[in-house]
Image 1 (tube, rainbow, N blue to C red):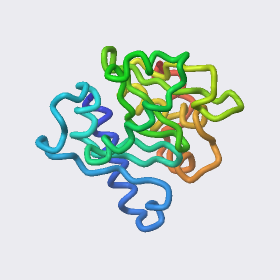
Image 2 (spheres, rainbow, N blue to C red):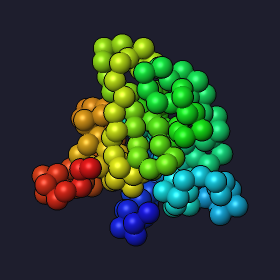
Image 3 (spheres, rainbow, N blue to C red):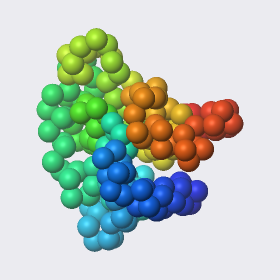
Length: 179
């Protein structure tokens, strides 16, 4: 994880704490996990993330904590046959959800994937797409930046919080943050 992203998560965690209890309704950034709590076999990017923020809920996006990661792996069993997941379940990891739909991490590359909306339930869809080349890029652009509205909505409390923090400024969109 880049030092800038780790610092931003720390700052946002502190800002959310100042707004408690209201902020608990739409967001929570977990405290750093202890080294021994994070399984060593996790991909490096995910392991680094959990050591900075052990779980994150940001509006409709949730990234699982180290203690909850095993509980969300059941999504792998429902992946459609056209996707590469059923042929290589061990090569994929569910890292969280977007509006109760899984967000996947490809273990070999560290890339973040999802089933984009197609007008049907995710497990009945016919599209599977890469969102970001790594978890840092995903968190920076889609969770803490202008990409949030692309995945979810620009009409919720998390989006409003990002706006108040200045993370949606046009300059942010043009600085190459998008993967």
